[in-house]
Length: 281
Image (tube, helix red, strand yellow):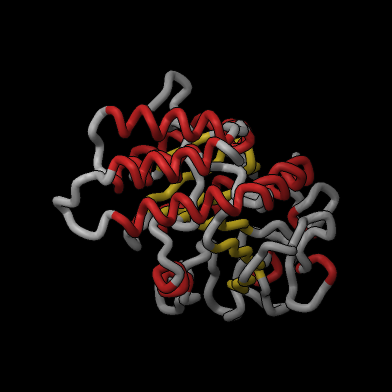
């Protein structure tokens, strides 16, 4: 944990998922249940969606017109996100190219639903936990609105379901509670927090093939095993979408597959040949 209460900046891999919570028209400023500043996090969420998450899922409140949460039914909220209306749609500026699934919640008139995993009564589940496990996800990152309601409920349920959970606080907005207050509560419940801008800065830091090769060679000199080398290389390899790095990806996978047995000793010449291939890219 850093001095500001956030966890150390994580590195994104395909074993991570991004959960985009309720970025809908009615929750934007000027909407039926507008959250101050919610429109300002759209560009940040769009940048996050370009990272190599194994799954990106978005949620929508999708309420019947007589939903229990509405003030006209005695609930705490004005009418919002009624199924099929413009207000229930995802924000037009939200980039949806990489969103793999959209989960709708709050569809039963008599039960409210904040979490992306299940309703408040814990009687109806969305199937998100099974979907995540089926994709090999072991950590989720949560962004969107509102931090003090649906984001927090989703993060708590993710922890309860056994996933490492990180809320990116600067990519969220709250209805009432401050980020500091929410962060303290979430951390006490096993939820980690971090800054999206720090995560993006880490992932954008481009190491050249030569720099990667030098680090691999240093590990080799330390008599590390192939798996340790490959793991380290994959952690620092962050420009996977660039075509010229395809050969690097292939080389790293070759390192992984060479480590077939727990006691496998390094074939130094073979590893050095792979490192030289990486350095020449």
